[in-house]
Image (cartoon, rainbow, N blue to C red):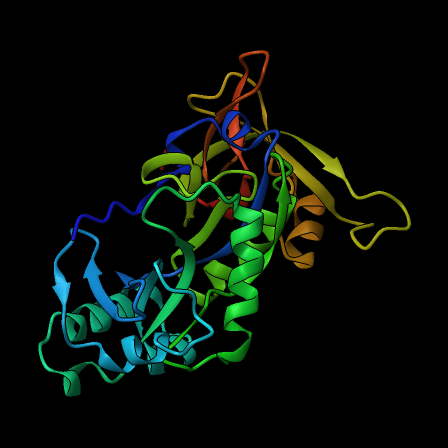
Length: 299
């Protein structure tokens, strides 16, 4: 069957300000599984296909569940397969994907009973002009009857991002990194489902590492939780045309340590999603997070 699913761009490959500004984004977990598209025809029969259009005949526990009458016909349900036990036990992403891929490549239903489908979008074959907000509302209504752990359930949504204000993304990515998961997905709530690769679907993967030389510090304001410590380190980073302000990722002890032991002139490791360019052409880092102090110069 000729199905062309939506494909995400990677935020790190683009200017985050240009991609995100002026749009409303649904933030969900980036599922590190195996892509499957379930098509429910106008007679209510459900068939399953890989991203490349190859038929998968052995996911009957999922296709039969989608045949329930409350799921609309003549619709494609866009999903990622996961090993259910590993997903709910919060196994890190490379283990989840490895085990899921192994089971998804098997034949016969008994070999795939451990797999569930996480539905993150849906669309009609004849060109779906409903905006993302309407599709999200419908997904929530449909899968309200499908608790987590069902053969197919809705992707967990973490929040809404308005434009390029990335404070929420930084906070959520801290949680992603702590769980050693893959990342986040951003869906433009004002856009229709766009087949193929487009900037209406954005993946935010684990951060890249950069090295910065500290040139200045900012201090925690009086009366705040970080009083008595630094609030940010200001760094020079290769490839950036302006100093980079690194204000998150520190423990309270690290904030106090840097106030008492000046890091100016030293090197630090920084996690960031990408380099970014503002409207004035200045190049900096998108959502920089402190990782560690480099103890030896020249690393």
